[in-house]
Every structure is written in C-alpha cells, then in structure tokens.
Image 1 (tube, rainbow, N blue to C red):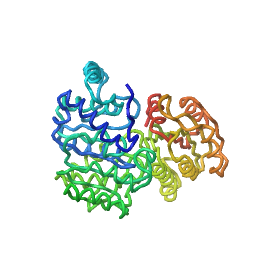
Image 2: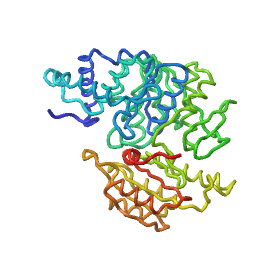
Image 3: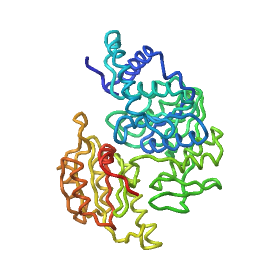
Image 4: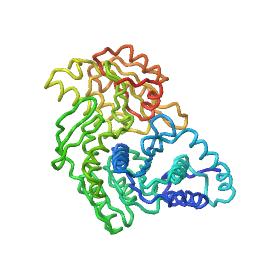
Length: 439
C-alpha cells in the first residue's frame, strides 16, 4: 500500500489527519482520555521548552507526560512520564497490541498506510492513557497545522517558540508561510504563548488567535543577563526572582522565561517553577558529557540552532575568559575540535559559515545517521564548504562511521581543549549511546 507523504501536495494535509483519526477511532480514542494538553511548536527551542514545562508541572505534583521528537538515541526516549522514559518492555507490549489492529486498519480503511510519526503518536497516546497522566506536554514533529500531534481534541496552552527557516521544502517557502502552518495548532479554548518578536509574523499568529477567539501572550524575554554562567548551570533574574538552569547556552534563558510566563498563567507558584527549571535536563542541547577535555554533544540542525551553539561556545571563551583567563581551569587559548554531520535538506553553506567563526583546529566530517531512509549531506560537499569558510585552515578528515570520527578526534584532543559534536541530533544521539558520561 503506497502512502501520501507529509505535506506532499496541496490537499495532502487533510488526508493524513483523516487517516490518523480513522485509526484512533478504531482504538477507542486514547487521546481523549488525557485531561490537559500543552502543545509546543516552533523552529527552535521546542524541545527545551517541552522539557522545562514537563519538569515544572512535575514539580507541582502533577502526573505529567511529555513527547520528544526526534528521540536522542533510542526510540523509547520519545515518551516520558515523571523522571523516566518508556521502558523497552512497555514499548514491546504496545507494539504487540497494535500489530493486529494495523492488520484490521489495512483491511478496512479508505485511506493509505500510517506514517512512522503517526504511529509514534498513537503509541504515546496509549502509553499516557495507561498511566493516567493529568497533563501531556506534546512536542510537534514538523510544522503544526497538519502535524500528527494536532489530532488532539483540545488543549490548555498552545506554544509557538519562534519562526525560522527550517523544513523549508516541506511546510513553507518563507517565514510567512511557515508562521501560518505553525499557527495551525491554535484552537478554541486555549491560551497562546510565543517568543516571536517579528511584527509581521506575530500578526499572522494574532490573526489565527482572532479566528479562534483566544488570547495571544507575547513573552518579553530580552536583555536578561545571567548573574552566573559556567559549564554546569546558568542563573538569571526575571521579574525580581532568581532562576537556575542546569543547561548550557544563554539562549536557554529565553526559552525558560517563556515557560515561566506559561507556568504563571497556570497559577504555578514561583518556588515550584524555580525547582522545576533547575531539575530540567534536555539531552543533546549543548550537553556536557565529559570534562578535561570538555566534550559537548549538541543537536543543532538548522541555521538558528547553529547560531546559538556558536554563541554559546563564544560566550564560554569570551565572557568567562575575560574575567578569569580560564574556563574550568582551561586556558583561554585552548583549541576547538569539531565533529559534524548534517542532513542533505539543510542550508549547509550558512551553517558551515557560522561554525567557521569558532576557528576549529580540526574538523571530522561524517554521516549524521546510518538510517538509509534519511538523506545525509554529501561528505565531499561539506569538506569543500569547510575549506571555503574556515580561513584558519583546519585539518579536515572524512569518516563514514561517526564512532570512528569520534575516536580519531578524541586522540587529538588535549585535556585543555573542547570537542564539539554538532550538526544533527541523529549524529550526537548515535555517539551518546557509545560514550560514557563522566562529569
């Protein structure tokens, strides 16, 4: 049975929302058994926002679930309740339950076969229904209006972190079109929050809010300078209260403030928000897995995310080295080593141009995933782009196997250096399975 792929054609969206609804109806609509939803979309930051909100709600005593897409390393990391991910046994049990249901679907449906992402949403709904979660923080996979996650019948809060250029060939040709698709998660009865500041894009979001008769809250989260900042945490002030994040990157302050505004709307006390934010952890977002040398696994996979990664590394050098001359006992003259792998449908030149600002000493270029169904960027093309934009002439080497790239680079990395893996969450996730965390 052939399948219409996501956003392939002008009428495709309604088609695959209907096929998912048909299957969920067969299963008794598990998505309707979850009392409260927070639905999160955006070009960048939606994974971190999902993680922050999940942790805040858990700190408030709620039975809360969350979905993450894509998963960091293994598929069971897509679904989380409290502080644990779905177990392998639970995953196997749900899949066993679904297999005969899918046979029935094929025999009775007027539609085509469900996609992989649609099935992961179904698995999540069944899992969260079983555990009777009070709240589900649901991360959009791609876009919003016709994303499988938008099948949910209601939501308390719709979140649009920002609008940037990613998945351009799928959900829109420019930011205006992308804003329209992401605004599609706005439904009657919910409050809408965004960090987007562009007036033209906010007008598109506002138009959807007006259509659904809901209120738009724009999070005013600029110019918040951290009081402390190191490789372990960031502390910052917002509206006369202090908050600490156990993550890397000054851009995370913006994400955290958006979550603070949402939590206050939900009447969650300040001290609970503080506790939830400090406990929150998001894998592969500038994740420090080892010190001496400092090894960072990062999942930046579009221009906006790469810019924040570069800014974070520069802040580690510039802001801290200017005051102390060292970073975690690391000389400010330490070298940076890059391991990169990217998908083929990205703005490769712009991303490499941004990474070149870090003046890497070595660059290991590898495939970002072994998945034959995903198109990886051509390694030779990436090499040419690195040679074009890296004026400091780093040593560049190609590897087919990401683990070989890691071991080779690690041998060149001295204790005072930084090793950064970035360009794709699939690349960092693959390495994360094989590297022992030691901090």
